[in-house]
Image 1 (tube, rainbow, N blue to C red):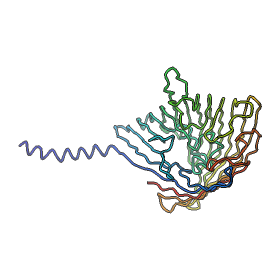
Image 2 (tube, one colour):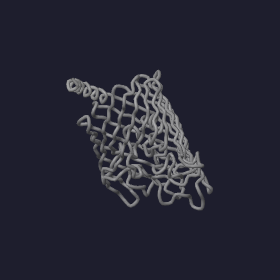
Image 3 (cartoon, one colour):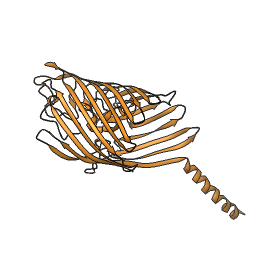
Image 4 (cartoon, rainbow, N blue to C red):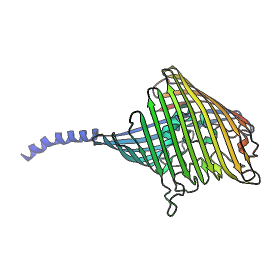
Amino acid sequence: MNKKFRMLMIPSLLLWGVSAYAQSSVTMYGLIDEGINFTNNAGRGSAVKLQSGDVVGSRWGIKGAEDLGGGDKAIFLLENGFNASNGALGQDDRMFGRQAYVGLSSQTLGTVTLGRQYDPTIDVFSGLTAAGNWAGDVGATPFDNDNTDWDFRVNNSVKYVSPTIAGFTGEAMYGFSNTAGGFADNRLYSAAGQYQFGGLTAAVAYMKIDDPGNNSSGAVAGDEVFTGTSQENIDAAVAYKWNKVFVAVDYSHTKIDSPTGNAYLSGSIQPAGGDWTGWTFDNFQINGEYYFRPNFWLGAMYTYTMGKLDSTVGNYSPKWHQVALMLDYDPSARTSLYLQAAYQHVVSANTGTQFDDAQLIAAAGPSSTANQMVYRIAMIHRF
């Protein structure tokens, strides 16, 4: 009798196990972006360089969700960034430097995640800019001052994303300093909102970082763009999508107090005989895409940046003009082939520093003049 009972129970247990497993999912994914960049002036002449991750960072990741019932889920994501040219780890040699978080998701209440992740300005605003949408490095603002090119993530962070209600989605984040006795030492807080109706998308975003780059265990440490006593970003964008055309107009404002460095500046940083007291960048951009066919499109961008560089020995107002183009063809759903070109011109303020020279993010180095061009031919494969 017991033997018969056990024989009857085995199929039931197997079916229960399959059912339980079906309520959870784990997915591995990734992509490789690899190509050749030509820079017309990289300080000592032209340069040709094999470069990984210019449009989108090369990566692989694992993500999963467990159904908790009632539209609720437990979720996680671990995402590694790497350099396809040499196999090196990205994001300051972190194993899961792109993202690493766990959280809870509800259809009615929204999503809360904890870990290393993107801030709301990336989620809501960046995707409406050329750098965050299609151009990557060739479309980044000077020195990626607004982080639309996804240069840094936020450690020690708690993020909330609301459900979409009447076309509106909101986000908020707090990144802890994780420093005993220094609650505000390298912390971050950010909030953003996006509204969508038909082809229209509008977004606003705000981010504040205290002491960026000055605390190795803080919210933004190791891959920060700026080092200083504080950084403030204010962003706004509006975009419209027609059948074959996408057009966006963007504005971003970045202010850094008592700056001492930038990830893309080297050599002479401080003005002769003095120190910087503040940097401000105002970026105005129009970008768009035209789809000849769903798998064949052209992107274009123009950005005008006004700088205000204050120091103990004087104030300077450089300006940057930048254009970028990208032609993309997708021979399959997982593979893209593309060509890019970008040009930057600096209206120099004669600071006697690297601010006087053109420097595209995709370039092999800063130019020795106020002008610079970069060309790229590459491919992306997704898996």
